[in-house]
Image 1: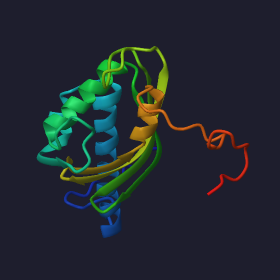
Image 2: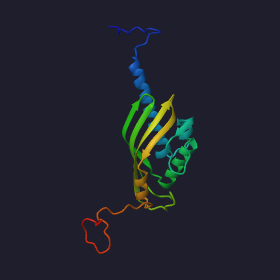
Image 3: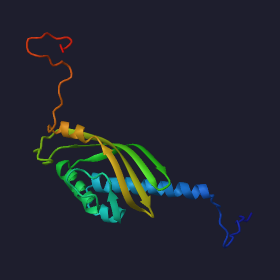
Image 4: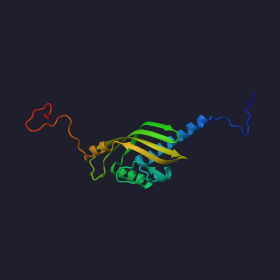
Length: 181
């Protein structure tokens, strides 16, 4: 028995796509752009990722301390963190896309093997949780807004000490309890 072949139709799409599917594809592409950029720059230490993923007119609205809010500032941030924490990597906790925006909630971590913010290498592991919002168009990242737990990072590095909350401060000669006014 001869096998039957399906006819080929030239010029006819086999799958018709709805506008919603096209939008979802764009959102997924934007999410992939962001995750690939973060992986390349911060996890792999590829400073060329700035050229590959960031638009020429990129604006970092919340740059890390000591760097500029442009592409070169982002490249410098990557270099600073990779030099201090060669095993720096980011775990994506939540990744949400809507239109041209991608929001990530993450926890980055690494072991301090180099100097950072004037602190000599300690060999201690640190973590840095944060939230970033990225604007992506045409496969290029245009903008970033971020809130990172910088105070927590500075505490882990020993640069900031917070008061011990387990004891109240009392004037000399007064026992623990309500502080007299």
